[in-house]
Length: 173
Image (cartoon, rainbow, N blue to C red; front, top):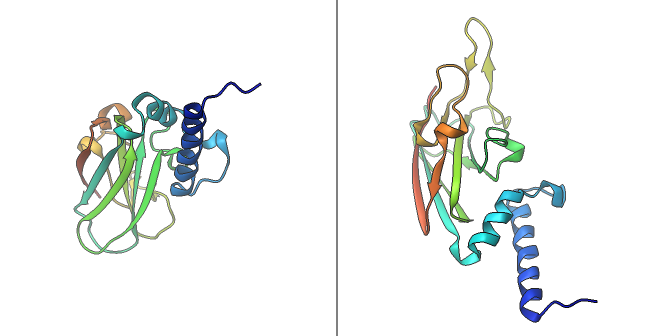
């Protein structure tokens, strides 16, 4: 027997609708198992009214070839795994700077990565010889860098505050 009140039914339907919107926004139709559980937990903890916007300004692009991939992550487990990004946007390049806005994020801890995908293959292209390293430009929140390999989630993380947080990420080649 269903003992749900009208308010419970409304809240349940609102969460389902919100999840469906997020799936469409992420172009993710793999089913409920692909929904980021920590994201849903943040929505339930903070509510829909606590949503924040994240404005990401990508700077120092060397040319207008390709697209800029901007990914938002909310855990070290998913960090730099594009299919597991909380949000992923592909932006056209019209100058040395690109602006991407992510709306409706609950306040919390996140990290952002950026790739200048010059050949539009949706990944970071690498060279392996003589010294391994990226061919395309990349950046991370907090201007995080690493001596070897990519920056860590720990070095890249920041607190998203309501109503808006602005990040400036420098592209490095």
